[in-house]
Amino acid sequence: MYIIMQNMDEFVARYVIMTKLRVNDIDDIMMIIANCADITMILLDAIYIYPLREYESLYMTIYNDYEIDTKRIYYKHTILTLVASRSYYKFVELLISDNDVDVNHIGSCAVGPVGITLCNAIKFNKNGEINEIAEKSDMLIKLMESGRYDVEYRTIFGYTLLHSAVKFPDVVRYICKRYPHMINAVSDDNITPLIIACIYGWRASAKILMECPECDPTIGSYSGKSAYELVQNRMPIISKMIEQRRI
Image 1 (cartoon, rainbow, N blue to C red):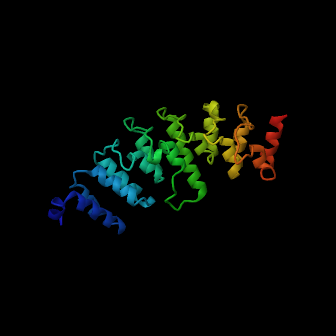
Image 2: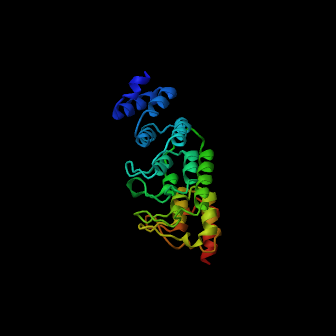
Image 3: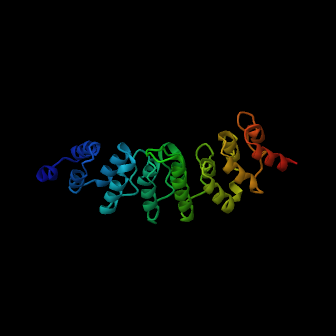
């Protein structure tokens, strides 16, 4: 078995590893990887094809045990934006702790760097919604606290991190406190973070935004409706706050 693995073609090795991931054959996977030349590509393949949460620790072990090229581009992703898109929070934390990792690389489809990617990541695990929000909030704040992340980056549609993070009240509070000039950021389609909070009924975040003196609820609209019109009869507390601001 070992001799076969030593002489295995790189492409075949990648195929065998993907097959063994299906049956969770970790020992054989690690043995094959040890005899491969391009371990970075194998790791990126595995994360892309098998993004299950239970494999996060395996992928982190491979990353820690071998020299992985964090600048390699894979379907427009680096390993950082790829693991962020898979909601691998511990892996993201490990990567952003490395000062050599580019935290501002724009991921797939020019959606944005790791912060925005995290906000929009598909949930590949079975955690409850509360745990998901808590984990993402913690990771996003750590990312901003690193001092290396471009918090004010805008996507090709003009959306900021605050637009994407409106679902996470702790992140909204953090950005409002440290970057108050971003509160009224308007996207290309005239959407503000407050408008998003009103559309989806995220009361806690809408309240945090409205409590900021910089917040202007008259800015932005959705389908011709202002923030006030969006919350009427749906979010009475926010509606009242907007009314008071308008007086």
